[in-house]
Length: 231
Image (cartoon, rainbow, N blue to C red; front, side, top):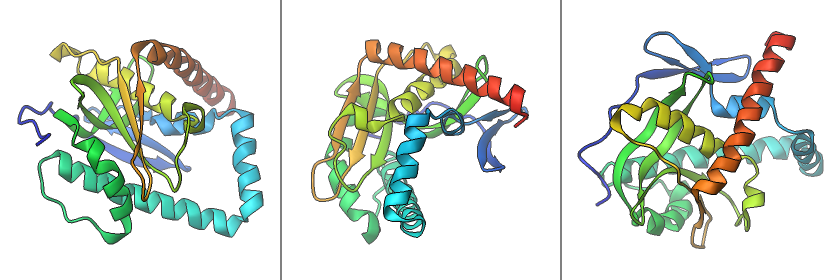
């Protein structure tokens, strides 16, 4: 049973959307853009071109359908994982069952669960986010992120900006929970794929440090653009 009765206290926060951008607001009214908002706003041109080419290849209507379906299955799978990690006995919806069966063996290696779907803020760098999970994987404390895909990614390069997202969460988590003498420097990203074992990507401190430098640059670019463009 992965559930730990000594959960970390949750941070009160609410999600708000404005002009297609997501923000989290803390109990004192501080409002910061979420990690994905910053990543989307500062996406490199090469990545933008890749998405545009994909939409052109499959067509706008089909691209919208695929994106909507992926979002729905991701939400369902996340809910299933959340209930499992909190010690509940969830009945899996049929639509997300292939992803659940893919990822469950990895989840059974997770223990000492301390936080599930918890909001985090980095006040020095003015950003926010929601951590999928803070727990231990094979005995090592880490921030965990769950993803779904129709086929295996195959390499870290094909994760695109997900490692940056994870690294940003680590930074905010460490700041929010520093009074508990917690400093996380490992990350686990698991991709659930139907009819096959989930892909497991493990990030050591050296890799996290490299991604952190990239993340700092993206945050600086985001706020610079906001000043000049007024959004």
